[in-house]
Picture 1 (cartoon, protein in one colour):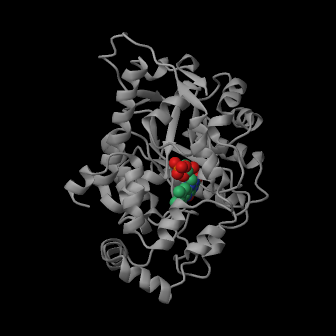
Picture 2 (spheres, helix red, strand yellow):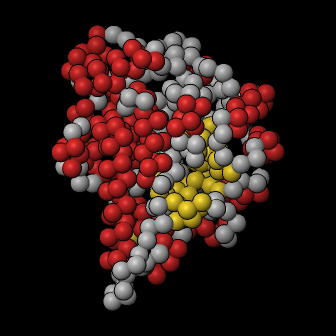
Picture 3 (tube, rainbow, N blue to C red):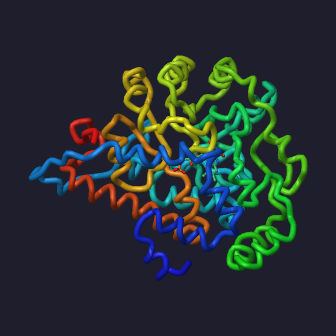
Length: 386
Ligand SMILES: Cc1cc2nc3c(=O)[nH]c(=O)nc-3n(C[C@H](O)[C@H](O)[C@H](O)COP(=O)(O)O)c2cc1C
């Protein structure tokens, strides 16, 4: 996307429309969709409408800042980039693009464990990137993966725990997306009708890096995305329990964050097990359809945790005002998924930098309109239930 076209992107949702045109239908459907009836996907967006601001005025907000401290680091904004699998199929070198943009913008980026670029290559470009793992089912494979993540230099490990079974993504099948990717006539037609993606992302990837493989599910390289063995890489996870989390806590020296917490009791158990933070998340509506919006359980989780560990949250955040509402309700940090992947797909590094800038400037402007100068000062006095 040219610089002029990027300037036409005025909010995060504009990237979604651009990506709808740019990406083959199955790939766009994979990013945009969720499970079964998309109920949780809708809940996530609707939740923000349940709250309204009660602004303060005449408070000299000229020295305001979106800077936020988390785990002893200062970030330029209270939001980061959520982990998204197979990003490198959507955007050329997608994970590196997202990590590099986050580095430039001074915000955290979580690299997905279901990624197609070696974690070591991403860490080399952006060493402060966080790594997200899906736990392998077997203890020795868990240990080996943790050791690899540590050796690659990551200091923050995010464990995603809301995937006891693979979700029912019938929407993906309808949109023509499958894992493994099945090359065929309809996929070929999608390639022909989306030439910028085909040449700029797909063929360029294959020419320079070969057929993409799942690189980071285990300590060793996984299957190529077109292999019928690829499902083996996802393995069984329905026997995983808190015992596994405790084992990881013993082995992993860095920050450990548990992603996919919804229930206050689970948040407390994660803190008991030694986690340094939790991400309240329903996986962007992509796991159990009908799960509540993270925003609606935030206050209960906060009450239960009593400040023991920072509370991070994701799901449906698209505006600076959305971020402000979550911070006012007690979140310490917010993560945003889909819009940044759309931005990477249509605009590469410049696209993601633009998207981060848009969200940050909305936040900065709205802090003034709300009458606050610091992220830490936001609280329930700033909002009311509609
Ligand atoms: C295309 C896509 C791939 C995802 N892959 C992962 C993943 O590999 N690991 C993970 O923990 N979450 C994954 N998620 C969930 C996101 O990390 C995040 O929880 C969710 O997208 C946030 O909602 P939002 O997209 O509405 O901002 C994925 C989400 C999308 C849209």
